[in-house]
Amino acid sequence: MNPLSLTGLCRALLRRELTVMLRSRAELANPLFFFLMVCALFPLGLGPSPQLLATMAPGILWIVALLSVLMASDSLFRSDFEDGTLEQVLLSPVSLYLIVLIKTLGHWLLTGLPLTLLAPLLALMLQMPSSGLVVLVLSLAAGSLVLSFIGAIGAALTVGLKRGGVLLSLLVLPLFVPVLIFGSAAVQRAVQGMDSVSPLALLAAMALLSLALAPLAIAGALRVSLDQ
Amino acid sequence: MWGWFHKWSSPRWFYQLSGRLLPWLAVLTALTLVAGVAWGLLFVPPDYKQGNSFRIIYIHVPAAAVAMAGYMVMAVAGAISLIWRIKLADMVMKCCAPIGAALTFLALVTGAIWGKPTWGTWWVWDARITSVLVLFFLYVGVLALYEAFDNKEAAGRACAILALVGAVNIPVIYWSVEWWYSLHQPASISFTGESSIHPSMLRPLILTIIGFYSFFAVSLLLFVRNEILNRERNTRWVRELILADSKV
Image (tube, rainbow over all chains, first blue to last red; front, side, top):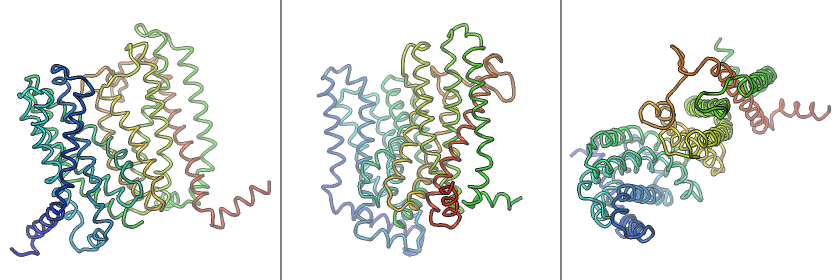
């Protein structure tokens, strides 16, 4: 494969991203354990009544998944920024849009996607009826993609700042709200036996939009962060 | 004509032009707001369902409308400052944020006050109220991001990007009452046809809407003039201005 071709470039970028992330496997497990533990806190705090948990399960799962993705977003650019790799990346002749797109996608593959696959297990723990499991996975798959990309915008804006972590949450949570609303609605409709195609379709549309447009904002934000 | 536009992008010319415009805008603001509020409170007949509690509409609706419009002004100013690197656009964007945040807060609080007697609750999580709350968080986010950067030029560019990303919320707020079934009533003022609100109630509302828009303009001009003086304080024209003022 010609390494100068577009596909060659994408493969190289993706391979680099996945390799670097897989080197610290313990760090990859952190969002998953966060997801697990915070979902376990809800029955402990709300009481173990199965009916109550079943009603709240779609919302709880979606909110905790959202928070896990938010936590994972902070580390997206940080290590590259600290060792100077990010500056070199900005100097490369390759389009920053493409680099950022593949980087965020690779990050999602190792953070958002595992969360999505873990979710059915936690749904059973939270007494969610099994009628909602398929829609849960579908909605989280598309939703976590959108959340990863929006989180990447926030991460790019705050990567150069000293206490950027909390600010990242403040900036990014308002933008998460529409995704949460539709994602949670999709699962709740499925649990109630209704048709959940429309929220799922909207989530898919958001995923495609964020794939296409978010890298523009991320690239711009990275240039701002590294220029200061 | 382009020369006239171009002048507005120079801080010094903006300061002088806005100085001439400001008294007129201030008078317009005072007149429309006082007339609109007095008319709305005293001379409009009570609503057949809500009685007198609907009168808060004359603050709530204009505040919400200008809060949304103000966000668009902030986003557009941010876009101009990013694309054409115009310093003044950066200042305008920065100054829109506190005014917009305050107006959004006012809209939310007056809405809650209105909701208590009419809907029986201070708050409800319907589409429009939730998206206006999100708008408030977006404004606060822009303010927080600006303060977090030490280099103010980078701060302006980062806030411009954030403002543009958050601009998708504005169509959501505007059309949320059409897309979702909600407690909030759909739009009653139509620019093209018959409005569903009675003309006797509509006329003072138009006055207060104009009043709030010109209030936004007055506040924005005052904030931006202050920002110009602050950022350009080492230039000769600002020094001469300050010396002339201090001699008085």
